[in-house]
Image (cartoon, rainbow, N blue to C red; front, top):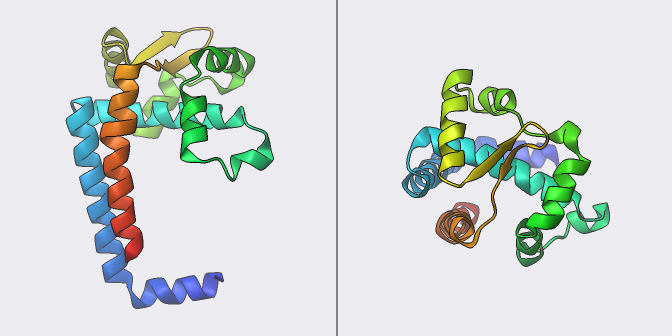
Length: 162
């Protein structure tokens, strides 16, 4: 599909596309807030998990990254030991409080306080050496992969049918 074709499809179907996209975002955010506990922590956890996923996928050879299945990605996601090595190996890619604050558009001090609480609750680890990292555990992975991701996947299927 060319950009021109895509532009025509979007122009001719903008209301259906956009209203359903916003509906997807609202319901996804609602689920994340329900599972994580509040909107600020939900945004912060999304950023940390996105970072975790990017570092995880960098562990794959580039030709495999394009075609990584959900199961393959999930198995890599859970390999905390290899991920710790990856964080140490890529310290220029450490996630910082400033980066999370900027990406979330949340004031630095609020971000710092929320990160400390998330660390206390066992969601993340904060280290000067490795930055902020998601703590993979069966309990937390269930919340992310089962509770949130299943909802996202079902919403995305409905959205893509449009």
